[in-house]
Image 1: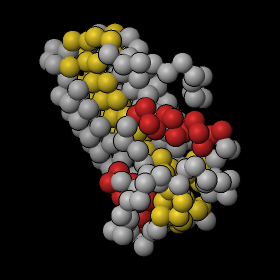
Image 2: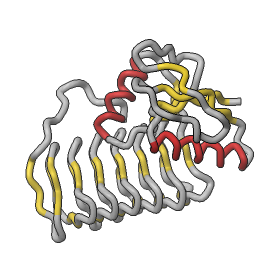
Image 3: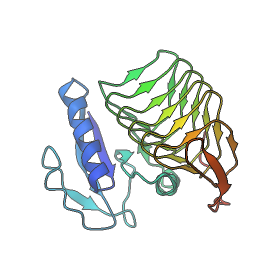
Amino acid sequence: MKQIIIVGGGRFGLEAATYLHDLARSGVELEVSGVIDDSSPDVSDFPGGVQKIGDLTSWDPRDFDHIIAIGDAHARWKVAALLGARSARFFSLIHPSAYIADTAEIGLGAMVCPLSFVGPHARVGPHAVINVQASLGHDARLGTAAVLSPGAKVSGRGEIGEGAFLGSLALMTPGAKLGAFSKMAAGAVWSGVAPEGSLVAGNPGKSRIMFRVPTTATLPQ
């Protein structure tokens, strides 16, 4: 039986715990062993009586599988790098209600949430998130630790770089590209090519470089 640690004790952590509980009820042999968080979150309403058991500073991850429950894409990227450097194992959380095409690829540590869609030959990178009712179309690419918020849609052949973030109901049209560590505002519609560190907002979307791109080595793709 897999022993899962949830990294992040906020409300996204609660969602992750709930989805893991759903997986266990569906027959997957797993158990949530605890929550790791550098603050002191209230996890009393997490299903199964999950407790906070430590923080990242002192945590030795080698005996557990981990799922990062942090909604900020850049923070996910940093935590994944930190845990990876400590030889952590990661669990890919795919909710039973999600649709995953047989030819799609799901990276280690990814979260595919309820009622979401991953199309044929799409690729979800390690630690990426496809949140509730979000979709990644055929042949699309979602980079390492990138996040699709609830209802975000990436059409076929879309490409999203590592550490990028799409707000709720954001839409990328077929073949559109969003560079690493960029952000799309909620409800934005994008049809072009946005370089790294861009902010895309509006409908039709407009892009400008706004964010610093990390200079450290990228995470495994």
